[in-house]
Length: 153
Image (cartoon, rainbow, N blue to C red; front, top):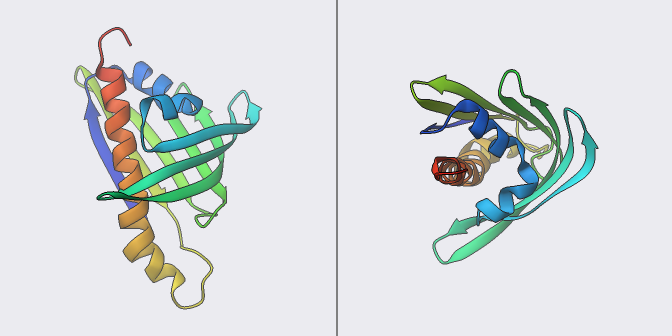
């Protein structure tokens, strides 16, 4: 399974990177995030627990995962490796690149799927990736864009 979400932002890469890598403040910026907790902190990231809602009309489905997180300020990238939850083993990379007066932000999720015999890969490719991963990632990008495009941020 591979999902790619991409969005242009009218903000410099350094501002976008600061907001994208400051995950503990996401619930204040992104209403679909229930909580984010740093379980283990390192200079280059740490272990982070995240919980979000995936809305379906009036209904919301809870999602939860724990990831190892690596931050590279020089490259403006944030990488994750999901280590707990249904998506354990998923690799995620945020790439923030200059684009004109702003930034081009891409989130790539790659995963072979859950270890469910016969149905794991189809579940990842047909449901988990396009419905849940894309559903949450696209909202995250839109919320980050709203935050970084505000004046005086």
